[in-house]
Length: 288
Image 1: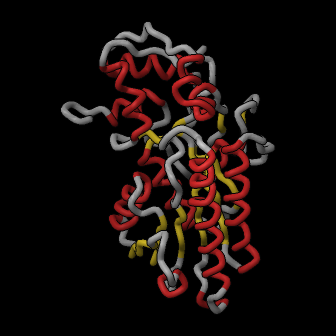
Image 2: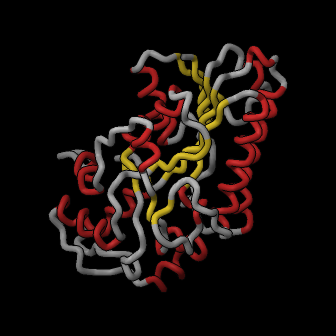
């Protein structure tokens, strides 16, 4: 396949391009500021849409929220508009777009699957608008898939690096109460899922990108402690996180238990089904 990728310079984009290239696919990088997306999409069989400013890139000021929203929703709108201008027989067959498990909301209870209702907080509203722009391509004859990503476990992941630092210093522990759900996925399994979404013509609509293990944040902290051989005795008070990060602290102090059943039903076999296995692979001797 010839596959176009937005957000190709990001963590997931770089790893996915390597994964697709190793599998023999031709990959085209789509710059977010390209003046002529339509020309770049010529001859493309599939698109992977990964564009978006980092959620944890700073406090959620009004300007930061606008950047988070526009970098996802506006870019996707431009992408679908470009597809609409193409002749019907020249359009890509599939559009696979990133989304996030945050669509289920910070107050969600129980195990969330792809048919669970959305939340009404900031991230949920961003994801709803993001996925809505993606689905516009369905009316153009393009199969669409929305990959609802959880915490990505990878050596290069800034969120994981920040999570590991206190443990390396011997002062690690759970965040807040530690009872909040902690969904995650290893970068290799995430790349497998994107590749599956590109190729499986029976997969449409949202699909959760989450490992099978259901655990709370305190259990994740203990797993990190075991891998690093460090204590996990010092919890980080919720109030401290709220003072430090403001509204963004909700990402750290809340969460959703997320089902992986749909991805598995479509044939995804997780290489790293547990958080400890994912972290242990990531923290190799002499690395990170």
